[in-house]
Image (tube, rainbow, N blue to C red; front, side, top):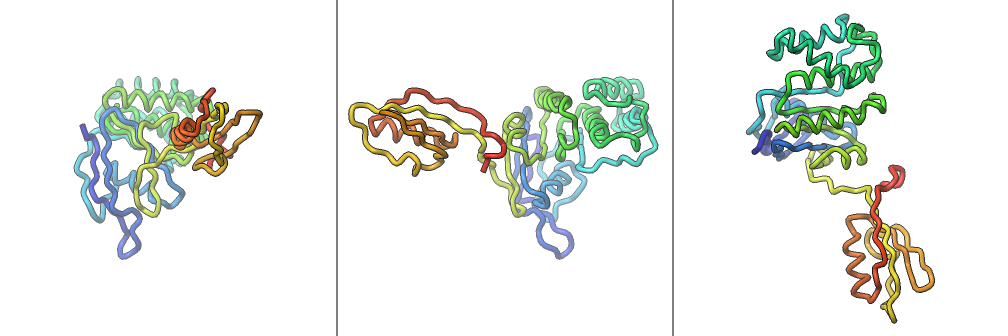
Length: 280
């Protein structure tokens, strides 16, 4: 079931250039969607349209649930209100009773391990702790659609796994999650579907950043193969009657087929994540 559906959505300001253009997007229940892209690519604009804070200049928003939670890229941290007072207020705005808002806020802040306590004024919180309050306000009303702009930004490492668990819980309860992040490791670990926005256009993001190490053993007289020249090959180490090839994950099947057809035996295939500094 489509919880979210956009058709041909575009956004521009006045007569300026299109920030996003021709965006088609469907998000189902139980889905966690990542949208990657560089700064200025239109990610935040797309999220604002998703949650209804901005109207598209072209195209249509055909489906969006009523209960939406949103974590913006910049959370207001100049408020004099304490964290718990702010969350209590936001809960009431979203239809919760004071008791429900108070209990839910404390539970979320405890899980996220807010440093300084719930009675700390927002303006005294660090960036990471302000982000925890932002996450709590979005999760408080149990949204059917949760939209987050760079949600891991500024969070301490101990909260990273907690956030991933919270997103999975929203999806597991029949909701949907859409978040932006530029790090492939986060996308691989968290998202069930990934897109990249580039030049205002949204497209499927082919998963990268995984490699396979393939150990091959020569049969009687195998055909010579230029392993280093095959698509996706990063390295080929030759031994006596054997070769070990490191290949991008998406080209592994192609390499194995070439090896088998050439009379090579496959001794082992080991798949692993590529170190972030080597992702190309």
